[in-house]
Image 1: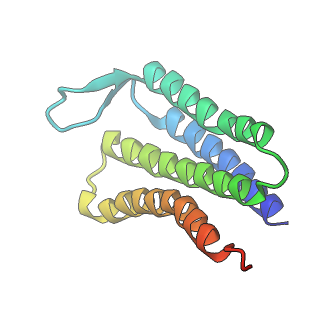
Image 2: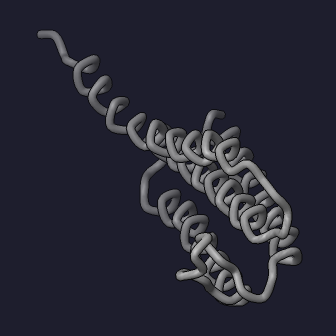
Length: 145
């Protein structure tokens, strides 16, 4: 049951990521700048294809993991669905930041820093849940004689 919930969350995060990506892509200029000094820039098409490839690889790994591990590894599958959903959330936040940074509007970038770092912290916390779960399982499944 938990796998189905995380699968739905992952699927909705994928749809949301693609919708926000397409919306932001339409509003981006031809040359996208990543810093104030304009030392690092990329074309709009370059960002599009890089992001599509990144999303395709990240989300295709879900299918690989679900096929490689047996039915007994339900917690691993649920955890991986959650991990990819959090990675999709980070991509949404990063794309929003790039869109805001490249708009001609004035924006206080200190406000969005908490959201960017928060999404990174969520990914890191979620990454450490699996090893912690394995450690707990190892010590709690001790057989008594």
